[in-house]
Image (cartoon, rainbow, N blue to C red; front, side):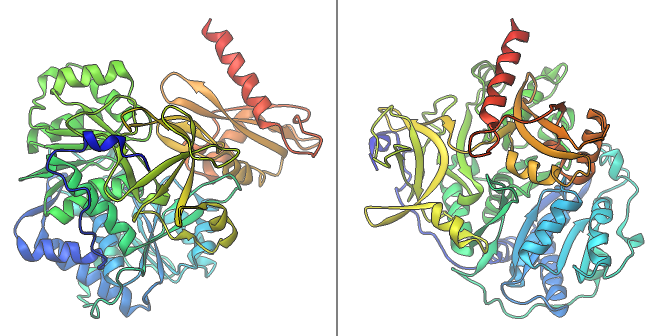
Length: 558
């Protein structure tokens, strides 16, 4: 890898940092032992110290083991941002099991695939998601369901209430086959066996959708998870001292999981949790709790800047802002700098790398830039046809060798094999992203090898949505493409062929999709055709449909 970026390396930061391979749950145990009275979590008037946080984790880990969870077992975590999410995440690891984080927008077909693919027999979920999970328990596919009502860890009198759809809920009334309310499990006061999972043992399996239809699990061990926790903590000067973190990124996603939860826990710092994004609430929380660090996506930052009369809020405590998911527009970065005096620090990572592999150096960031490779990361750019290594300003596929790279796709040896290439005796992950680095070693995104739609920072993989939509009884063919959206960047569009005699409408299809898949994956529009264009080999010409859609958008813009 060229070392052009080393002249811009953060001052005082070593090029390598010790990367422990012990169980991630030990990070919490050590933080609680060092300062048990330190506030760990604030959530709508409720607060939890590190000592109390660790105690609840121990109890829940003990419950899981008492009910058959063994080392290496997979446990689904299906929940929105809340204290219970953090407790459950660390309890699963403390029980020597592996966390399978699930997008809380997922619905029936998606959950069924995850249960079947992981072999998980236990799910810890938000109580509002119990209707999605119960059919699987009733069918005997799940043995234990632990629903948690977020309202159980709030102060009802607090002046910033929980989202109205979640108010008034309690896990006491959650019932069904195999159901044990979250609070009841903790109240049983079980204690776990000594921790044995470490280093190369299973820790987290985030699911990354891809080009072949169903999502596939990215196998991470404790060592790869620790790499971005400890590396990320070392990279960020805003983490020094008594940092306070605003948690708005979804914790099921690796960036939120690592940057907004596990890094603060490693440092024993305070986290202020927001379940549903709301710009005014975010401003109030920053002002009230003197938040110092906020990781977000570009769309959140844009929305925050559009808060009416934003100058009435005191945001002066912020000393670190940034994120990823999509490039931050230049004009928005300017406005954010004018408001806070801070640069929005952009980075790059994937589920396969457990968050960041590239981050902009805080002292010299570039805009709309992925950043430079962080500690221990060897990133190169290869010609997409020949695999020849390319030089500065030559676009090609970004490939990465790093301690945070996953071990492979869960139970998919062939896809794992295709995802890696050997260079100079080292195993590099093929990201599928087309990028380049400039003469100073900063990386930039230019395109993607893989077919993907970026809707408000959420990655939508057309093949997955197509696979789900092929279940529709009135459709025979479906092709998913992206369409221009002034607010979201891109939206999902379905081009479909009706089954003979069917009269299903666009709205019918959209409503069916909302019941079967996460909202961000659902097509916002459906165009019906007599037949889809195909190649001589019978493959749908999705690119042709995409180009027609892009031309249509340009005509409308003119």
